[in-house]
Length: 497
Ligand code: NAD
Figure 1 (tube, rainbow, N blue to C red):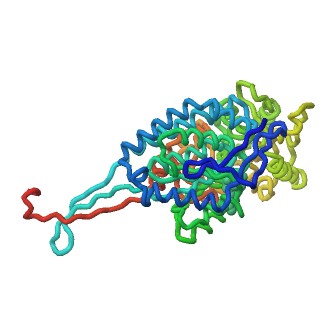
Figure 2 (spheres, helix red, strand yellow):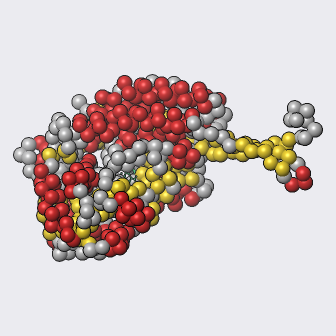
Figure 3 (cartoon, rainbow, N blue to C red):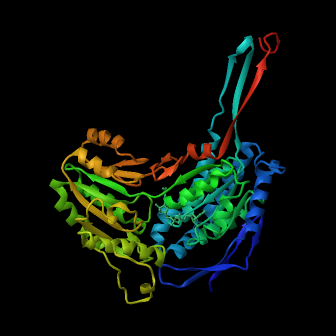
């Protein structure tokens, strides 16, 4: 029997008379009935969140000494670790990905984020300084980091648990109230997360979970609420723009991680075995649904044919739709709506003069998986650089490949996009790698690798890929308000010789 997923508001599980169905992208079966949060629930979550972070009841959370709050977070991290299997199960049910992937990429890694953020917050130093000011006064100032208040955490569906934890953990650690709005496509792992938080010592109201959609639903109600003090959002660039507009009312702070059309540059001296391993993951991991995934590969002309043949062989050999496969494999796209979008983009390839050397279609299994949202991993050549397939984010397992002749041309091709999220540089010449990296306008450049990532490293986005920084110290700073306190020092004071 499928589950009923409710909202968690001010310590209570609340149902709604408005519901929607979560359908499995793996086989079309019914996963859950999801209760959509109303405007009244958003109001209650925000009001109570304000009270316990910076309002009348702040002594219960925002006003707690950091050490006490971090003890609660460490205990929560232990509880999450104890529920890793439930988290993995929820992620597999919503996304159709394999247990292998959900275990290595999502489950425990997400739970560890709470511990990592608590440790990082414990080592945040406060600054202080003595000074001589105007008219001969002496003084001393110090800064402390105060909670910002209510932080709305609006998440996408691609790595739902990880994204939720990357936003909720730093918000809670710094004494804010976190209100999580997961994607309507992936409500399950957020619900398990809320269940674990409900059973922890995080006080009632410091965390709320609201299910629903964006425009005209929980997402918009939340981001346009004047008592939401900051918004951290990951999703499409178009949605980011709508959220920034909503946040302008009241001048509330935003952190936006948005879309990408990431390039890989494969130079003539690249180590092709390493490229094969790295690009299998960078083009196809999670069925191409990672914001850092590579959708464009520019390859030195001398290695172009070799590379194309290699990537076509890799794409054709990928295991698809085996939930219990214990090695690299891909599941479906998140749903039929998204598959229609990816498929439509793929259909533009032949009409613009390109051709597929692998994939380009829908796989047939002859069983219930044919009701799922699977797609074949695809490699295409010959598409003009101004064609939709090269310009638009697919967020699927697709790779455009084109040749270049020198470093300047490679860099120009990589930068010829509205986005600026990530890039990979494949070369055995490290001087070249470090020369090229700063010329590619992206927030994160990998050299001879992809997605080797410390989750506390800064994530910055250029151009239409985002606004503000996240990750580690940046997320803790976004989640707090530095306050400066200045006091006068009286020189004749015997306590200050
Ligand atoms: P999306 O923008 O459609 O939705 C993301 C979230 O925003 C969902 O929870 C949705 O309900 C909510 N939302 C939609 N409209 C809203 C509105 N008007 N007001 C408030 N909330 C609203 O994105 P998606 O389809 O879930 O995710 C895929 C996108 O996310 C891709 O573009 C991908 O590149 C991007 N992404 C970026 C990063 C990054 O780090 N830069 C990471 C993961 C995903």
